[in-house]
Amino acid sequence: QILAHRRGRILPAFPSTMSFQGQQTMLATAAAGAPPSLLTQVGMAGSAAVITVSFIHPIDVVKTRIQISSEYSKLGMGGTVSKITGEEGVLALWKGVNAAWLREASYTSLRLGLYEPVKVLFGAHESGAPFYKKFLAGSAAGAIGSLAGNPFDVLKTKMMAASGAEPPSMMSTARELMAKQGVSGFYRGIDSNILRAMVLNGTKMACYDQSKGYVVAATGWSKTSLLTQFFSAVAAGFFMTCTVSPFDMVRTRLMNQPADAKLYNNALDCAVKIATQEGPLTFWRGFMPIWSRFAPTTTLQLVIFEQLRSMMGMKAL
Image (tube, rainbow, N blue to C red; front, side, top):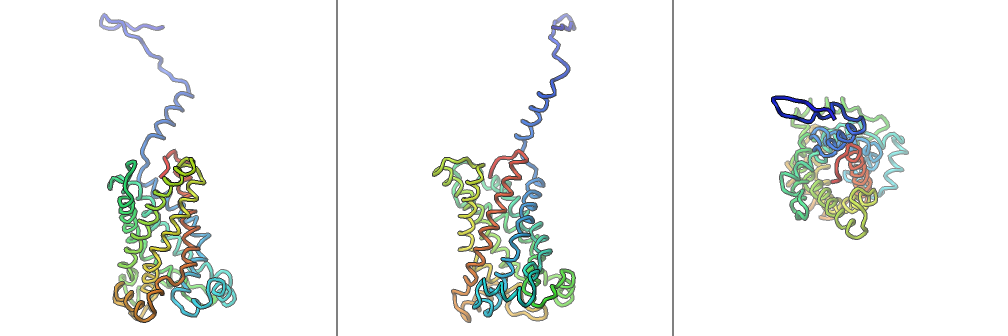
């Protein structure tokens, strides 16, 4: 052992170098313990959302057609797919997918990526936190995301609803909307969209969070298990469909109004007209295609998001 003498005292001199393996262990431990940055969480959420929507978008096109047209509603999912592909081609099922990518990169990245930070603000991150706190945290994150994603949501809805073999371009749709309605046209249905996003994200994240606890307790699987994440996400998708369908119907009707006309004054006016003119059950028209979209979307988004978090050394939601 080397001894260093200074000011009459004998001090042990520690080794000036550390083994490479030891340095790696310390760095890994520090990385795992460090809280993820907000940008990291939002980026991972956006990546998971964009990957998911690339596969799920055709279901969204079918759902939108059924919601805006009684003709498609009578045909059902199978008939709607046959009619679209027969008259407009298979690629018509991906109409508006570029707007959908931008929507997911803005809206979903925020509502999913902000959930954990907002949970901390609401005190919903603590063990045994009540369901309502998780719902409020999810709702707040959803509202923020909808503000950012509304313009792309309007463009996506109008592009998906457009008939004809030639798919409309996002730029031409945006120019027409801007010329006839100005900037406010991109925020059509913002009131219903915020309400929808709050109910959707509150239900999705709270039910997913709560379901994981039930699955872990019933099976003994860990929170990081792929099976735990899968079954919890499927449950969240079902409850989302039940609560979101009416808001989704109102939002779709508001966003798909003609560029040169205004059929509804606001979300409440739209809801009243649907209920009185078409009946209350119209709010759940397209339930099966919505569930067919929400189930795989929720499952893929959350599972991919959880796997990306795991790769980054972050704990499970």
